Every structure is written in C-alpha cells, then in structure tokens.
Length: 127
Image 1 (cartoon, helix red, strand yellow):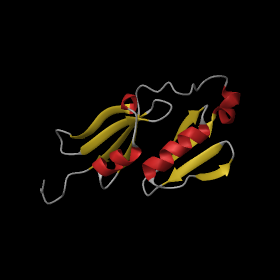
Image 2: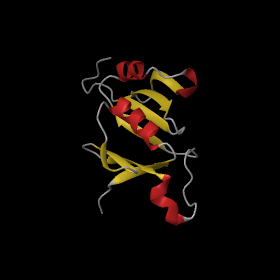
Image 3: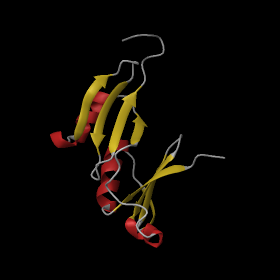
C-alpha cells in the first residue's frame, strides 16, 4: 500500500487554494476547475470543491474538522509565519519551541482546519 494524499473538501476552493499557495510558496496544480493539488516529496495535499463529492449524499461537510492537523515542515517557522500576516483569530499558537524540540506555529486555514508549520531541531544539538 502507498499513502497518496489528504483531501480537503471545501465550499471555497479558490480561497483555500490561495491560502495554501501562500503557506507552501508553490502554485497549485489545477487539473480541473473543481480540484487542486500540491505535490511534495512526502505526500499530496488535494483540495476539492463540494461538487466533487455530491454523489456521497452529505458524507463530507466542509469546514467542520476538529481533529486533524495539516502539517508542513519548513526551514524557518518564524519567517513563514510572519509572511502569512494572519488576523489574530486565525492564529492558534504563534511560533513556539515545543517540549520535544520542534519549532511550531499553528494557524487556521480559511475553512478552520489547523495547519502546523514546523521545523525539527538541529541534528547537532545547536539551539
């Protein structure tokens, strides 16, 4: 088995795509007007309009996630966080060094999903 992607279903495809383009610094691939994706070395983040799941009879409800993080490893958490220029209500946790050593900033995307921007501690033990 090969893990392929995480897909976020949304009523605001363009807004979510714009947010993740800002977070990743990459342009989304848009193979169809109702679908976009960001493919990286570890996985793919797919974003789809609710139109793509209409046949599922309401099994998915946009903007209701309360249990999953979307995580991106970045080189500079503080710099990436500053570039986002988010309103305070979209910041869950400003840049913080976690007890296990990762540097993290947690923010909400336009649908309210929590996004963790993190970096791992230096391998040589430097601060």
